[in-house]
Amino acid sequence: MSWLADLFGPRIRLPRDVRTKVPRKARKAAAQPLAGMQRVVDELGAMPGIADISDEKRAPRGFYAKIDEFLDLYDAYVEVVTVTMGLEGAAKAGTPEGRGACCAAPMTVSAIEAMRIYREVRTWRDFPQVGQSLAALGQQQFTDIQAFQKGADPEKMRVAGRALQKGRRRFAQRGEPCPLLDTKKGKCRAWSVRPLSCRMHHILPPTERAHPQHDAHDRVDVRNIRIPIRKQAALQQLDKRMSLGLAPFMYAGVLQLLELAQGELIPETGEAVQRMGQDGRVQQRANRNVKHAKKFKGKGKGRRK
Ligand code: SF4
Image (cartoon, rainbow, N blue to C red):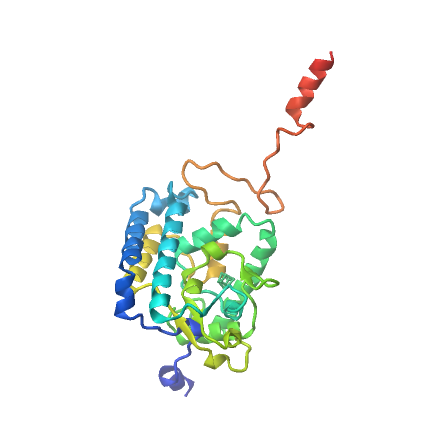
């Protein structure tokens, strides 16, 4: 009768799934950043070529700056809400105090978030290693979810389904830190472009409970300052318009972009292409002003004559 338990059993929730009600007072105080977020999403959706990124392997001009503007506005919204709710002292995912939360892979990452993260991490010198970790953990996460999947096509996942929830929990219990976390410092290396699901997550003391392998993890006290529902719907519409078909999981989404771009970056229209070397790193431009540069060799010979 496991199907009965599946239907009526207790809901499986990870700390990031906890619903935090944002008081009306806080939403009112944050009216300006909220309106700004809607405006930016509308502007992104209206950019020429926004639906052609997959074919052209290029983003519209000004695309990444708009995403940064959106992220700044979201941070401003979160700040107003945390102050109104008295959460200023809460730990955040991606900081030494809140690093335990970085073992639960970020989910429901939109296309613009994944593209901004990819643009950042693809230029890291150690991207080949980071990419390998993303691939290994992305595969593990998929296998963990599939193990609970029933029905004819185990490849098909329902985003709100119990298999997905159980698989996510099993994955988190492995205690594998996110590949974007600097495990020595306990800090997110992609802090400025980290996904909304990390920005929203606030952990109250004792913060060590945020680690999925902590004995009292099921009692960790968190608040999630989610993007309001109408803005979520607007982001989903934008995802559809961009039609990149990315997975909602950060690890898989970033790798899909790597595949789409065939290992290169996804530049904006009019932006110079940064080539990648065979080792997977960004090729450094030759410094043409050093003594041994080709252009000086010719001149030196001429002067000696
Ligand atoms: S993206 Fe950064 S904050 Fe989010 S889980 Fe990874 S390391 Fe933590």
